[in-house]
Length: 236
Image (cartoon, rainbow, N blue to C red):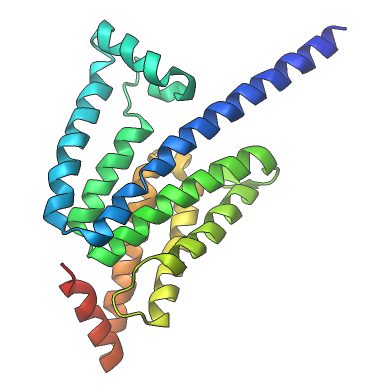
């Protein structure tokens, strides 16, 4: 009888955990508005909005560890979807939402426009896909995550890449981004041992990889690759 009760309790816990993860990822997906907006707006306009939002998010995130009223309000709004490390008063770590905003700002400031949009859009869509598939179907380990979740990450990333804007519309750009997504998939799977929040490590890894590959291609002095790199760098 106790085993039946225990099984029921565990099933209920998994159901609550899955529903919380689903709600968390739905909020996460709303951040897709950032790369979509950046596709149509200049860098300066996007940063005028994002930088204050990021500053406020970080202040609130740290404030909850020191101010009781902020902590209660924060948990009232987000309690069911928070992960343990985000409420740990000893470690005082930023939440995933703050890292999303920080990485968005860094990608937009540092990377060429096409790379920033691609890297951040992959994070938003593929991280959510990986988490949901991994939690539901994950059975085989792949670094710190499940193989099933990582496959879902990469496959969904390829879909995002096919829809993302390109500098010149060249098929080369798809393969450059696909290689970046592969490296990003590995970075996401190794996030625990790397001690980096995947909302930060994934877009930065993809962006750096893509930029390096574009640059290396331009060094071949092939006119098409040189032209492609110039178009990439000249986008507003």
